[in-house]
Length: 250
Length: 247
Image (cartoon, rainbow over all chains, first blue to last red; front, side, top):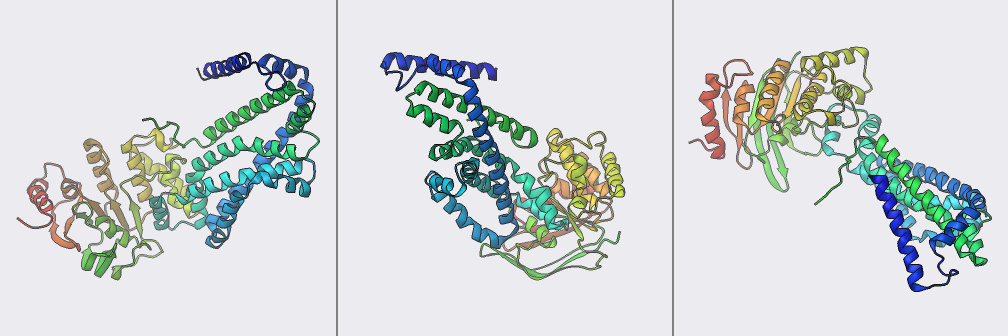
């Protein structure tokens, strides 16, 4: 049923796209229809796959490093109130500075290779992961903590057995957001300065007025990002089996 | 088990700038089951938290145990909410205290399995709390409390969320398994207090006062038709309805 719904949704989007092209009569170098884009996708598939490999590596490595950094920071803030007082402003500042404005600086520091794009993805991911995990841990049921205190629990055991598992559903929400925004970080990084990746290839195609190729790269990026999101979503549901599965309805 | 008495000596506590307890003196006998009865919000649960040594409640006066058993922690706590960890199996939830102290031994596991059997939960050792009924979950919470082997058991309306039949069954199980310990059971149900208590202390007023102390004959759990239950029930109900004022 879910697959059928997705197929209907995709077909609906493609039809709407084609209708928009037909009704507005925009030239193909502004908005090509789905068919020329599909043709470009097939023709340029091997090249697109090579560039996808680069972008996908940047996204996945950025996601892993950003999640690791975010969880470590959140745990450190829970364990040490002193660190919390110092880290909270840093967290807010990390969001206050527009990350996209940092892209040229990151390219300057880390070069034209993958490192600057990974750093960009890490910067984007860091805040949602840290803040969701930290606030999840802070919202641990006080009765559970009181029970642990009366039981004479060791602090690290409380962290491992009660606080962290309690916060994992909130952490999962943060990772889902991170998975959705990680491709943005990688592609923006590629736009600023790179020699490979789908973002680079899109700029390259744009400069040569190959708008259909540009849309083909965009399509492949969207499909892979969606697949990655659904994969992570499924994985989190499977691993954090105690999180509520029923959605709220009115 | 050398179960100590709990002695409140001139205990005063303010809550939101209002006195909750003022110079409260109370003795809860060792090895007995004392039921604290009172209307909602009168401070019954706070009384338990004070005994448990909650750092969030700065009181004056003293709360002491008359015979200090060896070892650190002396009280185990069971709340209205079962507080089972949804990511742990029933067996691991029963062993929670030992896990949190890094003290899980084969003997502890054996004891937990034995208690699970006593409570009629054999076959559910590896089940997650989400797969258990409300009564089974509360039984698991009771076993987790008993696994602590503490001389003092603090029970905060542990059966109030259950249906009538499950409640009676669990009261019987609880009375059987907690026999010999100093049990302080907070409840707003006079019937439960009459079934499970050796002594009933009725609290009322603001600041909280002891409105009445009733010593009960016989061994808990009393049958619902026991003369002690039927004799005191109307009186306790009236007392609660009149907020502690005798009629």
